[in-house]
Length: 561
Image 1 (cartoon, rainbow, N blue to C red):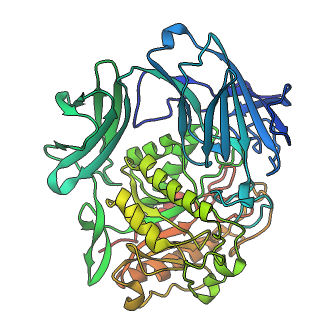
Image 2 (cartoon, rainbow, N blue to C red):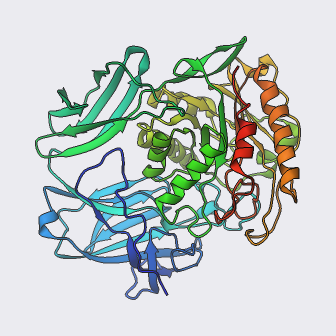
């Protein structure tokens, strides 16, 4: 029987909070058809926001590329809720969504990882019917897909589709604050803010001090006695913005990521000081909800575990999370390396796997080799990369963007990198995580499994920082908590054997290379996911395999002296 509980109903947008909020999460009707026409009858009920492929959805069916997924919700809106405008928000729908309200076509959104919205005040009635039609090609087209694969297995996971993040409605005034852009500048004790609104000016209120600032242009706000943000001291400034009829609350942090010289090597700096970023890879998958946790407490538990293990960084791998995940990183103090989402056609094994053994790097203008023949797919990817930066720009914990990973749909990275710098030049970039390095961006990025890490020679570094962006991956399967039982990477049967290997690896591959120029390391990985049982915690989050204090004691030795 379908659980009638509404999931993830907390206000979903911590960086732009207003008091107008109506959650549409809960039980919707669903149907799966090969025909595109909206059906007259539906197949059953589905828990939103969970993909039909998940246990928490109550459906447990995989949407095929030749099928359409339909959602229907009937709801009421109280007249007292309605102001000048009513906005319907979707935080993510995978992969192509077409939305109808009361038989009116609102529009289409392509891409399964970013939010979109529609103004619906002209179509609202006392009783309303919302229809969403979804098409998901998964890995059979060039659209972004992450690690989803129709034929899952190994490092590729169960595909999912449809609504997997919150859906909500807000009502706002004509002069509402549409968006804000926040850029910290610790060298000049400034916050640069740009408020997007039809109002000519807004009130900026910080620490009970009020200042009138113009909208739609960048304005510098001087911060007295700046309190800098770091993982050790994650201080957030909370502020309010007001127009005549709208009010939002938000926050920012003062921090800077850059590079500096340490013992003759170029390294990463946080707040102008050398800072070793020791992190863990986080796929962001949950056994019962795949992309979507059962509650936001699951997010917080994961992040607190990362900190308890002695890490200060998390690499969000090939996934964009709900806004609350990033807020928790800001609040708890974890640096974030944010990956862009990969797309392209079917990947060639020789491109995405052989370099792990051979070390051979290809020129990424060879579109066929990288499964990027379609010009439309390349153009879509660039647009989505830009939109990703704009969407997450205000998140202070994000300090590095990963453009491409292991050649998955990589293309024209020199040109793409230049385009990204136009959007954000305040953070670091890893243009090619793992292999197919084109000699550009801020980092020389290494993925090393099964063998000893060897630092590259200075000619290959090309005046960049060296990061070990993936390594380790040691398995410790826990009986009764595995998903499929297929093994990847190196497997162990005892905690002691695993711990000894982990400690040896950290000393040999990380600590011993710090004085040779290594600037950061990302261990694979936080949790088990399906075939991959190389997490610190099981896929169901029920068993922490090794006592965190033992891992922390080893990780505490990773540092610039």
